[in-house]
Image (tube, rainbow, N blue to C red; front, side, top):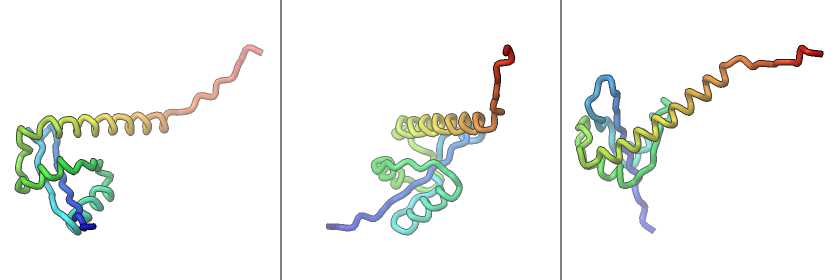
Length: 106
């Protein structure tokens, strides 16, 4: 059985400053492990998608994501925004005061 080296790629997108997402890191083997470890360390969402990583790996660092990948990256960002919304909602619910209403009509 052949060993397949792990690959990883990281994209960055800030809708306030970036026109399109950019590739900010890529690598295989130990570099991929380090990219994944840093993402986990900073609480950055990780999506495992072999085909997307392969496509991103063909780009040079800091390149804009090409039009051909917009649909895939848009779906990824939509998934991330959905997850972030759920996390914010859970945090808000955790901070909300608990109402302990009792029946005052006795």
